[in-house]
Length: 436
Image 1: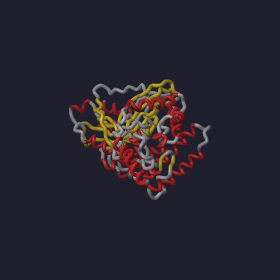
Image 2: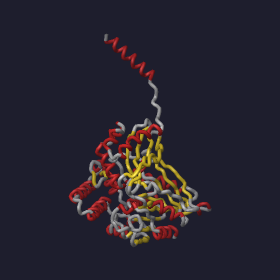
Image 3: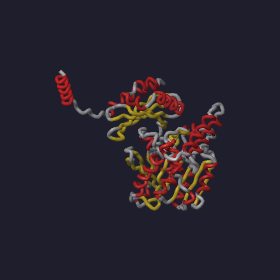
Image 4: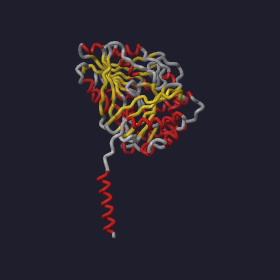
């Protein structure tokens, strides 16, 4: 009897094997309806229902509490929904992953929900970001933009553009590799309605200087493990690839390529330059202090503007967490800790690889807006004193913000939801530094 049962089961298995076919990859058209369904519930401000109507794959990788918190935070930033825009773009990042961006027009700025699907139309990730939906960029006359892609060691495809001045048609021109600031920002380094790096790229091109800018890893994907996410993965490795792409182009004078970093990009640039050895550094709104100290001061500044909030004990605890992280003897020990929303590996790895600025002897440009409420006097001093042996040009600008736009005096990031451009004086000074 046992033999008969075994034989029958074997027969069934063989029949199933013979009858099965390989599942075919889905098309984008099969993914859009699910994104639409989830966004229909979000439009009704029912994130719990939206989460319940997603897929098991998403629910396995993300807790409902995190999904709801993400949505509430997005609405707090962008304002209530005014209207539904719909699908903004779709693209395959790889053979296994597709991105679908779905947009809402909100009171302050557009809100984009980015869905990640696998090749079988299963929703595997979701994130949100703000975007000026009515921004229609066009390079000034005579300036062209050339798109490119690079693939990181982790398999993430990063999209970017090289901005070419008209002079590049006639010979090799100087260039700048543009490093964006903190957060999951795209190539334009858009914060609200201010596109810092795009303004800088167009302004430099008008002066005869090429530039390269690209999306950050965190903008392109949400699949990188937060436990091992680091400056090395976010900046050093991908921008080393981008630097090679720029310097190997015959239209670029490889001996006159500069690193231009803003915010966290300015902090990272000296470390990146240890291996690239650029012609010089341009550091805007940066710091040489440990990153957690800046994050502590930023939180304190925010609370000073909102005395009704009582988070001081929590912020003090986060500072203690960060100091504990920095005292660890290995990345393995540090990665189990968190502080100010960052994993311990991120802080620890950055602290272990802080360059000695006193060893820099090349030209350095330092810039800061005097109405900057996201970096402070201590950060400016850490840079001006840190580059003790470099040829330093240091300029502070009256009335300008962290993004070098005219300050509205609110001391709040909401001022970036007002359309503004990077001050021309700053662009002129940076261009003059490169062309000197």
